[in-house]
Length: 302
View 1 (cartoon, one colour):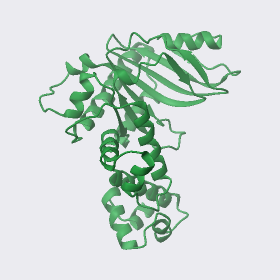
View 2 (cartoon, rainbow, N blue to C red):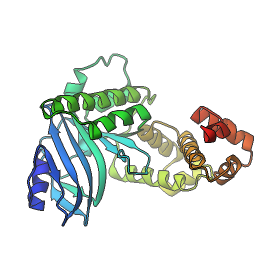
View 3 (spheres, rainbow, N blue to C red):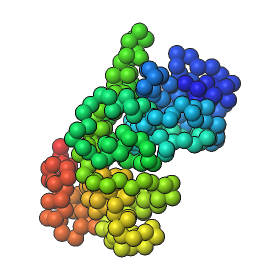
């Protein structure tokens, strides 16, 4: 991979067995790159640098048909919610690449024509069709559930003999992509909106502000005013990117936070409910069970 060798040159080191270990004077961690064939490749990045870098993109002309699956916060030592960004080529044609000081991601790039040849699109999923046509700027985010995380862990931590490594990693990468496409097919959007960087930044800013106040349910008109969008546009773009309505996303995140607080064991069920804005503990218990699968008291003891 050209990016890997560009970084190695910048750090004054070499790539060994498709892996670049960050020299101590620049930080710590590693970057590993795998080109499985003309259709699919993968980079694993898990490092901390002492300062941000910007490099020219050496592969600006080789990603024309590639769809990017960017797995974020998937290493065990990170605390953020693991998720994957799925983007079309036109979202990833920057001439420079920012190299941030702290990165823990896996990038899988797959040729859209190759993907289209692998399965039947006759079910007519607008989301999948829009993604695989790869002609307009689209971005989707999907939360990573435990079985997906298990595959990620196999990619990162499984010890495999060198003679089988490329074969093993390609199968795992394609399994991840297949499972993610199966999730995207479940989305029910009938129309997709071409995205721009400003709208994406706005939607993510609104989401972050909403999740910082889990004790206060979102008010669409207030969020739309803050986003400088109509309520209709805000709701449509949010659901297109995250696959869920604003309130459902908020409620799901709030229950995951409740589950985390209960597992820590420092707070009672009533304390957690009140902290997250519930005044009726029976309502909290019912909502928690709908999202997590058991009552909060039962969950705290499990």
